[in-house]
Amino acid sequence: MRVDAFSLAGKTAVVTGGSKGLGEAISLALAEAGANVVAVARDPESLAALAARHTNIEIWAANVMDASFPEALAQRDVDILVNNAGTNMPLPMAEVAIDILDNMLNLNVRSAYLVAQAAVRSMLRRGNGGAIVNITSQMGHVGSPRRTVYCMTKHALEGLTKAMAVELAPHNIRVNSVAPTFIETPMTRPMLDNADFRAFVDSMIPLGRIGKPEDVAAAVFYLVSPAANMVTGTSLLVDGGWTAQ
Image 1 (tube, one colour):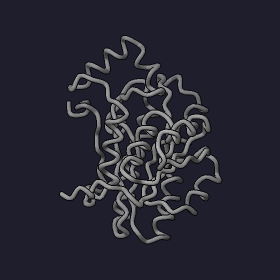
Image 2 (cartoon, rainbow, N blue to C red):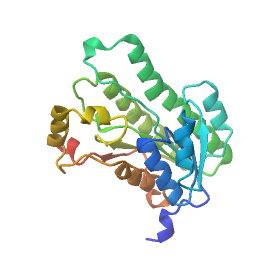
Image 3 (cartoon, rainbow, N blue to C red):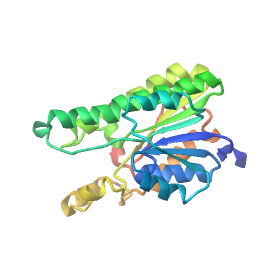
């Protein structure tokens, strides 16, 4: 295999939720591979801190749920999209309030769809193909207590990934998902700080360790690179074996 099969030189990659946690690691990995990365997030300070770490990173302070964002994204030249913005609020099903349900559906599903749609419009306009990775979760493949809404949204994204892949293949636009297990990020830290929950998670991962953001970034990098030229419509599980049991 040629070494340049892993180069992203000359490509523009948009990473939503790109300033912290998984998004930060993904943005840095793609920038290191030569891509011009546009990191999108709501917090200007965290974006500025990220941009200071690599010259290939451009920052875009925006909320992906704003109606104006997909329209603005469609006008840009996009070669790669990493649809990473998302949230979770674990609760027993009987205690999920309507506002929590609506917020998770709007961010995890509705905005993810509209952002992907905008990137597709950019790719189709330019006619150069492209690569899209939806960040889902191992919970998009299984079920789990206190995660009815989260599982529902991530299963939805897995279905979207497959449908997009089939529809867009004739245009040489590849669409895949990356489905991580519990990764140590600012979002998961409060959950993992609970000793009982941490013990449960450790017991469910055959590799016996919590994932790192860099583990997910490596999977994303592979899928958007020329090395994955024949890979579309699949979900790459970065779960330490959780779903293999």
